[in-house]
Amino acid sequence: MQCFIYRSNKKSELYVYLAKQDDFSTIPADLFKSIGQPEYVMELEITPDRQLARENAVDILKGIEDNGFYIQMPPTVESLLKKPTESDTLLN
Image 1 (cartoon, rainbow, N blue to C red):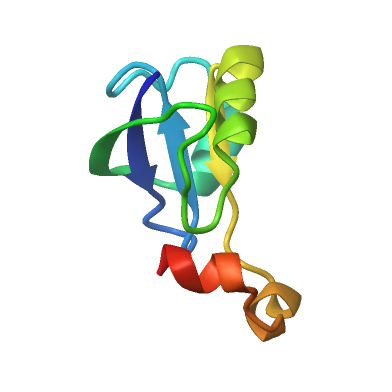
Image 2 (tube, rainbow, N blue to C red; image 1 turned 45 degrees about the vertical axis):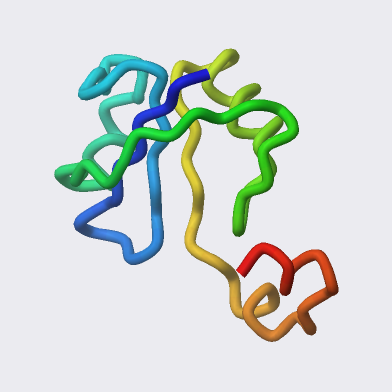
């Protein structure tokens, strides 16, 4: 699936994935307001087996299929303190 990725201008490291460029109509108004004005980052082909740095591609695809969008939340303190695994280091 071709995805269009946007970054929040209000919340650091929060990203929105969409199937259609600039189509924010599926995002509930209150949620959209909390994101702020989304800033276009890139277009990316995401397949179920695609390796991504912080998100699971299947979760993104399912989120878009179920809701029309997927939101990548900023990392938690716990995830930042987690010792990297071998697969994590291969992705960076």
